[in-house]
Image 1 (cartoon, rainbow, N blue to C red):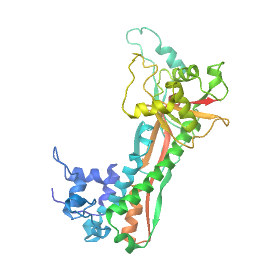
Image 2 (image 1 turned 90 degrees about the vertical axis):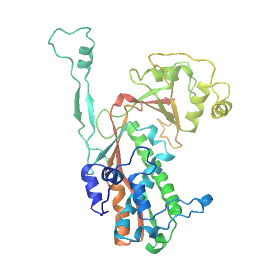
Image 3 (image 1 turned 60 degrees about the vertical axis):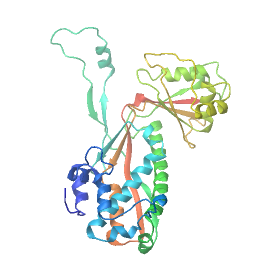
Image 4 (image 1 turned 90 degrees about the horizontal axis):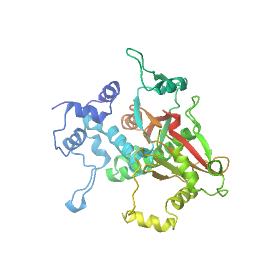
Length: 360
């Protein structure tokens, strides 16, 4: 389908609540089996090569390729945004921590939660309801306080002409690295929400102590009994994701594979598997994704292990088009600072889906 690229298309995408690339897909749908997206077809149409292929004698374009026509200029902000989106998820643990992502039009958002009071829960335990009687209701409500929306990203300070003469694969390398750092900033705030809540009442994670779960545990050392009891405390949720620092991660591995955690890590990295298997139909102890983060906030100065039911815990909220505006400003105003950023925040959906194990 033939259409003319126009800068106003970014506003159209924002009004429809979709990324610019998705708007292009609506205007020019990709056929089944197509190797190129609608955005990539536009790059090809305007002769913009984003990746070098030395084995084929192909050298990528310089940034100036986006400046050839008014139409090709429209593609540059989305190029920067694409690099940012990929770097935020490529080498990051963010995808393992987020249950759902919600795009918003604006910088204020209140999370929606399920108000299933104890009275409703008790009523729901009745084995039978009479004919025409009402079932217990669980109400969906908005939280009292709006989430804090922060700007995550970095600025590249360089002359307008310097950036234009850069090869796209070199620019892409810098954008990805800066995006990865931005993702680390997001992870810090997400984990703070896991521990302290999102600013609304009753959203902080409950803290369980190692020696309260197992009175015989050695001080400062995670016991197997405490670990298993911690996982059981999530019921009917599941602790399917754990984030820990160096000390916490090694202690968990010592619990799971007590012979030698470093040898077992080598064993797992080689793709080997354990020979014994136990079926737990209730998923009381399900497969757990272990994630490492070096600066996990401690609990009362003790090593803390963050347990999460990834399916129900964290909602990420992203302001639509926030990663577009600064790149658009660079290309239209010819400034000397290229900013890549994303306006986002994190909310707690079900507080019971997060708990912290303090190794006291």
